[in-house]
Image 1 (tube, rainbow, N blue to C red):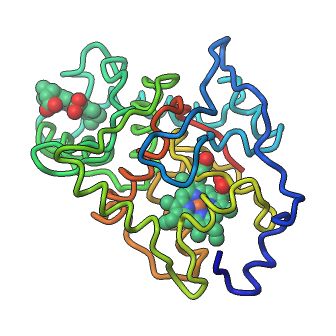
Image 2: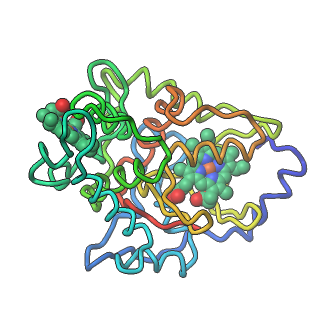
Length: 277
Ligand code: HEC
Ligand code: HEC
């Protein structure tokens, strides 16, 4: 690995003291989640994939094993209120048409992002396109509380199902682009996603136990920020840490990156909404 000298010093534990992911079992309401499994075939440098939950402290882990303790559930409730709220020129709510409630979307989150009519769509796109086209309502702000509450509500319907995004056919060019971004070194520190999440997972970087950077728990509730964090918001934060200019939330680059990063987690169960430090 090719790291700047002071950066090497930041990765504590590479010389044997590495604390690997723990081996605890994630079980919510008696349902056991797959947090460790064989890596999908397209992954060249990793043979086993792990959920980020396995790298968190017992205190943070505990918040996710009981929905009453999971602070993200308040936001899911807000998402439900929003689902039922009439908005826009057509005088409709989501529930006006989706009369079976969000349960109708079980399984959808596992396949996102996906290509629709030749365009790569992430969940936020589906929600906003819908709001504009069929409700005549204003789009929601990408990382705003309302949007992420809605993404969490729809995501929760797929909790416990394995991630299963398509990377072939129409999706292939987007996936290639996302993969290229993943392995590009950014910023003054010249670090790629892979330098941290592939080469150094299990090690400590400053006070953080590095995971494989999986997105099966998103949107996640971050204790530090006391709110739901979108996938693109997390990408921004990670790129900023390399002291680089970053792509915008909702940009084509981040959508492609999201597809690629999602495909690295194919086989892990969805934990939305997860809790992180
Ligand atoms: C006027 C009726 C109508 C309203 C209002 C409406 N939808 Fe839909 N929605 C549909 C129809 C019809 C489909 C299936 C066809 C399609 O995918 O466009 C659908 C599909 C979807 C899908 C699934 C897309 C897929 O690829 O499987 C999602 C997610 C969705 N709607 C979310 C919402 C949300 C969230 C709201 C509220 C912000 C909403 N919808 C409001 C009619 C509506
Ligand atoms: C300098 C090291 C570093 C780089 C480079 C980096 N990350 Fe991270 N990332 C972290 C740290 C530290 C965390 C918080 C601890 C953890 O979950 O691994 C994190 C967390 C994440 C998470 C949340 C995982 C979870 O389970 O909640 C995702 C997703 C992620 N990173 C994706 C990326 C992507 C995509 C890139 C490249 C654009 C990237 N990271 C680049 C250090 C880095």
